[in-house]
Length: 169
Image 1 (cartoon, helix red, strand yellow):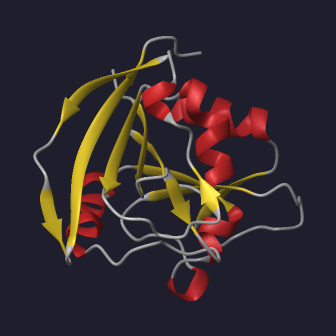
Image 2 (image 1 turned 180 degrees about the horizontal axis):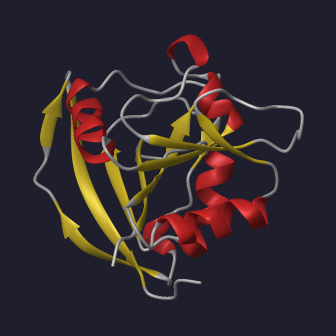
Image 3 (image 1 turned 135 degrees about the horizontal axis):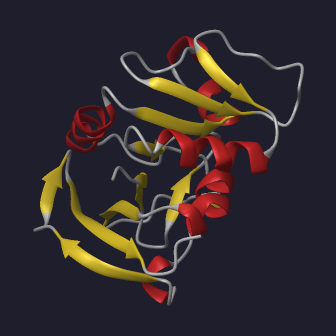
């Protein structure tokens, strides 16, 4: 069975972004993201797609984009226009492939009940975030199942934590 996995990094306050961008430049984390998601399905909200270079889908992946505006159709993407259809498609896609939820904050938080795992790379710094992820360590539906050793990534101490959803919908 394949999984639905949220993959992201956060600062020490669970901050994940500001001004529709990332908080830190983390080449190691970006490499891990690329290696993990290439060849699989990535699912995101419209603002995440628009934050990419040239506002184009990620190469070598099936890109699913949720836009609440039915007139927004993005080339090279599977376009979905309501949340129930988005979740249904993630579940269907996960029958044949691993699906990675890649943002943004609203999508991460809304899809949390439906994911099998969360791969959260914690950065020991304050990124002055404007948007935040769920405080997963305080969420009774999730348990920490793996924790990596601290790593240095571009001057920041990071640690990959993997959480399992005990009550997936």
